[in-house]
Amino acid sequence: MLELHKKIVIDENSKPIAVQIPIEEFERLEEVIENYGLSKLMDEVKSDERVTGEDAKKYYQSLKQNVES
Image (tube, rainbow, N blue to C red; front, side, top):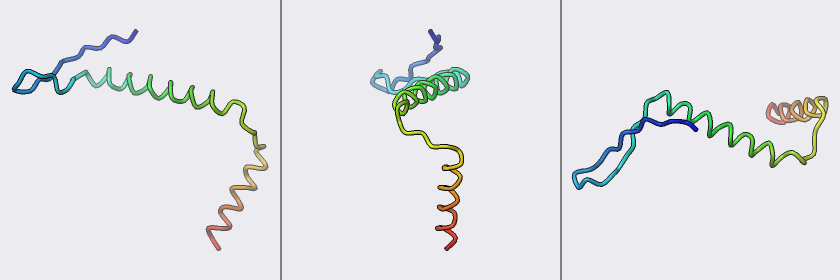
């Protein structure tokens, strides 16, 4: 498990309002969240229709031509 060295910021009424963590730990959290989101997306599209590379090139070329005209 990822160890967090957090500091809790409190307001004048001693209520917690924020948390501070070292930037390295924040960046690691971002990476973990992004990887989790990517794996969920990959699971969601696992059974989607696949397009060949050639078909993709043709499609994007048609988009480019539509933008230029």
